[in-house]
Every structure is written in C-alpha cells, then in structure tokens.
Image (tube, rainbow, N blue to C red):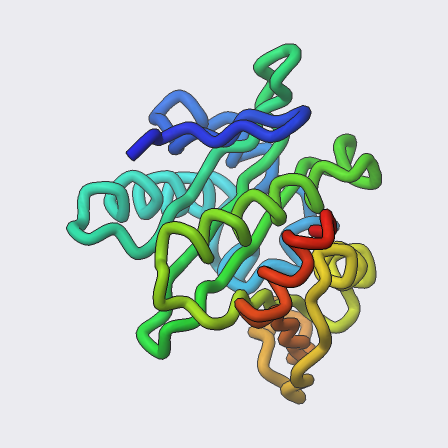
Length: 192
C-alpha cells in the first residue's frame, strides 16, 4: 500500500520522529486544544501531549492490521507541515475521520481537502465501511462547517460528552455522518 496520499494542494504522509515540533506547536495553542478530546487535559504539559500523540501514531503503524492511520499534512508546494489528519476503523464498522490544522492555515479549504482524502481512503481501504463519522465539540463552528462541506450530516449531539479541561465545564459532542451510499452518489455526481 502506498503510504503517501496526494491531493491537489496537500501531501499526507505517515508521521515521523521529526514531526515532533509540529505537534508541539499544536499542543501549545490553547485555542486549538480547547476543542480537542485528548489534548490539553489538566496536568498534562504540551510536551507530553505532543510526545504521546507522536508515539501513539508511530505505534499504530506497526500493528497488523492497521486500524488507525495518522498522517502529517504538508503543503505540496513547499513541504511545510501544517497539521494532522486521521482515519480509524471502529469495531462497529464505521470509519472515524479527524483533522487538526495550525491556526495560520485554517480558513483556506485545507481541512476539507484533507478530510475528503481521509473519507475516500476510509471507504476504499475498508470495503466493509458503511459510514464515515466525525466528532467535534459543538462550540467548534469551523470544524462543524468542514463536516458539512464534506457532505456529512448532523446525526447526534451528546450532552456533556467532552472532557473537562480544568474549568469544570464538560462540552457537548456533535456527531456527523456520511453513509457509503451518499458518498458513492456524491462521487458519481462530481461532489465531495
């Protein structure tokens, strides 16, 4: 299997040890980690968050079969790392997709482009996958808009499902879904 995925403007490749600075930059941005499920938890330093993520991503690649693919997102033109994107096969047969971009690269369509690549990967790599699923904190409007631009529809809002980040608040979690049938329909019509 080809380890690298290319889109119009992006290169998605498996994480490497040298990607720690990108992950540390993500972990040090409070406006980013406030919406991320496993990042920025009380008592965990940005250094530990970045290290934990990198080691987990590298370890998952060694499992057989691989059920979690974490990719470093780079600008194709310059090779500059700008974030991460993932696809994970769940036990129930769904495929979860997710993305994190550095703040200075948001609002340019990169998250949609990378998310679309992960959705396509999920439906083609795991033939039994019937739904692509993405989750976010309901307060994260930009991420919700990415899901909608990917053709996903709001399936559920679970009250208090997000972790307490030390402020005593547990946010609500939105679940967005796109079925294989709708994905095929969109592909045939030239959509996402």
